[in-house]
Length: 78
Image (cartoon, rainbow, N blue to C red; front, side, top):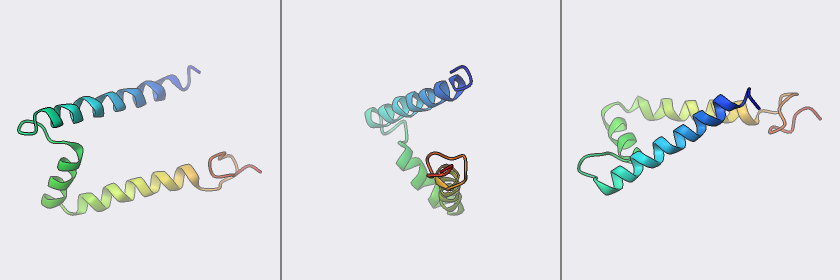
C-alpha cells in the first residue's frame, strides 16, 4: 500500500486540480479557460502540440494495454 500511496495522492490531486479549474472556468469564463478552450487555443498557436498530446496518450495506451507477460491489463502472463 505504501508504494502506491504517492500515485493515489497524485491522481486525487490531479482530479481535484481539474475539478477546481473547470468549475472556475464555467463560473468565470472571462477570467479562466476550460481545458477544452486551452487545448483549442494552444493548437491554434502551435498546431504540433495537438499531435504531441495525441502521441503521448497513444504511448500511454500502448504501455497500459500491450500484451507483455507481466501485464494483467493486456491479458499477459497467461
